[in-house]
Amino acid sequence: MKLLSVVGARPQFVKLAAVAHAAAQARVEHVIVHTGQHYDPMLSDVFFTELGIPAPDVHLGVGSGTHGVQTGAMLGALDAVLDEHRPDWVLVYGDTNSTLAAALSAVKLHLPIAHLEAGLRSFNRRMPEEHNRVLTDHAADLLLAPTRVAVDHLAGEGLASRTVLVGDVMTDVLRVVRESTSGRGSSLVDELGLEPGEFLVATIHRAENTDDPVRLQAVVDGLAACGRPVVLLAHPRVVAKAAEHSIRLDRGGLVVHPPLAYGDLLAAALASGGVVTDSGGLQKEAFLLRVPCTTVRTETEWVETIELGWNVLVPDPADLPAVVSRPAPQPTDATPYGDGHAAERVIAELVARS
Ligand code: UD1
Image (cartoon, rainbow, N blue to C red):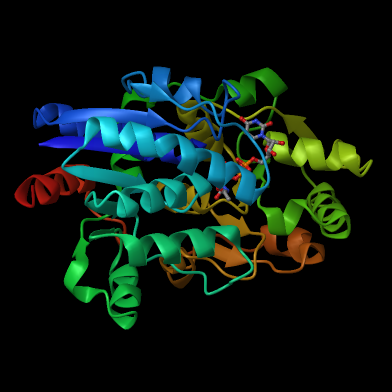
C-alpha cells in the first residue's frame, strides 16, 4: 500500500509521528507532504527532529495568509503532487487549512481520502476549524474517529457507514514521550527558576481569543491576575496580534516565553499547578497527565475532559483567577482517548481497504 500524508501545522506533526512509526513498522510506503503552513523552527522542524519523523518528501512552502489565500495556495500546489504520487490513500489530519486543502485536492482527483481525528465538533460555526473538519468529514471516504462521542456525531450526520473508532493518536505519542523523558525534570522550571506546582502554563492562539483586541486584552488581563506566575508559551500569532494592538503581554504574573518542544511541554505541564489554554491538544494532554486544565473558550471538542472533572471552560477571562484556584479534581482511571495503539489501528484499517 502507498500512503500519502498531508500535514502543515504543529499539532499535525505530533499526530504524524504516531502514524509514521506505525507505517514504518507495517512496511507501508509513506510519502509525507508538508504544506508549509507552519514554518518557524519551533512550530515545525523541532517536532520532526524530536519525534523521529522522516523529513518531508515534498515541502510546498505555502506560509501564512488569509484563509482563502493560504488554502487556495495549498490546493493549487497539491494537485500536481497527488497526481504524481497517485497513492492508495491520502491521509489528512485534524482541522487546519492544510487538512481542508488536501481533502479538496484529493476528492477532485478521485483519490481515496481518510480523515484522522474525524467527527470532532464544537458546533461553533464561527471557528475556522469547525468548517474545516465538517467539510473534510463529508468529503472523506474513511473517517477515523478518536472517541465514541466523535463516532456519534458522524452517525448523526449520516456518515456511520464510513466511520471506524481507532482512538486518539496523540495519546500514542504522549505515552511514548512521557516514558522516554520520565525523571528528566522541566527545562522551563530550571530556566525561569520556577517553584514546581506553584505556577501555571498557558497557551493562547485561537482566532477567537487573539484577533479582537478587546478580547485579547481581556485574556491577558485575566492571565496576569491569577496571583501566581503564569508562563505564556507564546505562539507567533499572539505575539503578532499583541504588537499590532500595543497590548503588553509581560505584566502581573505573566511571563512570556517562546513555544516549547514536545517533551519540554509535557515536562512543564507536569511540573505546573495547572494549564490554561485554548488549544485542543493541550486540553487532552493535560488530562492524560492528570494536570488540571482551564480552557478559555465557550465550548470544547474534547468533552470527556470536562465530564471527568479535569477541565473547566471559562468563556469570560475575568473569571480566570477564581477558576484556576479551584480544588483538585477527583482522580480517575478513565481512558476515553484509547490505549496508546491508535496509529497501529489506523494503518491496519487503511491496509485492509487498499
Ligand atoms: C493553525 C490552525 C489551528 C491550529 C494551530 C496550531 C487553521 C485555520 N488554524 O492556527 O487550527 O490549532 O494552527 O498551532 O488552520 N505564524 C508565524 N510562524 C509560523 C506560523 C504562523 O509567525 O510558522 C503566524 C503568522 O502571523 C500567521 C499566524 O501565525 O499569520 C497564524 O498562522 P496560521 O497558520 O494561519 O494559523 P494558526 O493560528 O497557527
